[in-house]
Image 1 (cartoon, helix red, strand yellow):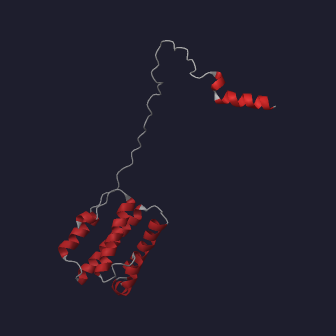
Image 2 (cartoon, rainbow, N blue to C red):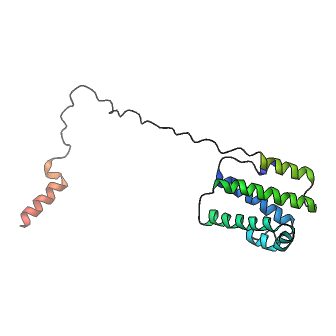
Image 3 (cartoon, rainbow, N blue to C red):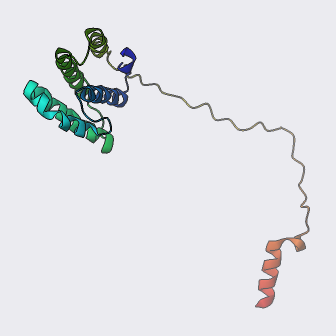
Length: 167
């Protein structure tokens, strides 16, 4: 399970993996596997409201932000990852108390949630273009090029002659 959530520095990928953890937890509570995240949360809403209403509000906010990120393509704010990680660990602890997770599996998931590092620092790298160079040119004089076709056989000259004769 540790490979399931490890922060990589890609906010969108990390956020999607975090929502997958929420979906898995909601499925363990009895939500349908084929539903959307909102439908899964709606299916177990009464259970979560009875246990922890603050957690339920936070999960609905996470669903709202997830829909904006996935459908409206808004960027993932950094605080959403921290808040989402805290919500998921709260949800998992609640499910562990109810017996949906065993302690070894839960400690592995929570350890992975707590140990994610900050995103890698931004380093600006300026890529200088190579010096412009002309192709190699021989120093000798070029020979005089003689056309292979005579002037009378060239198409443009024929068009000009025909236009002149039509006048």
